[in-house]
Image (cartoon, rainbow, N blue to C red; front, side, top):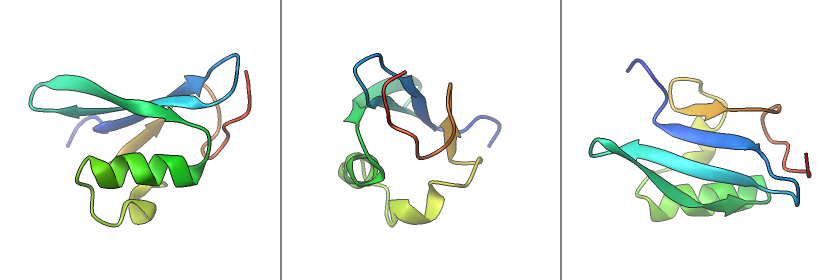
Length: 74
C-alpha cells in the first residue's frame, strides 16, 4: 500500500476535520469529525473493523495539516 487510504484533513476554521477514504478508485468524504469518537464512527460505517487500532498507523491513516487527534479550529 503506497498511500494511506484514509485521510483526516486539516482542521477547519470552525473546528472539526473532514475525513475521506479512497476506495474503488475514488475519494469518498465520510463526514466532519470533531473527535476521535466521530472518526471511529465514520470508519465503522465505512466497513472498517476495529478502527481504533489503525488511527495511529500511517499505512492506513494520513493526518494532514495538524497533529493526530487534534480537532480544534484552525
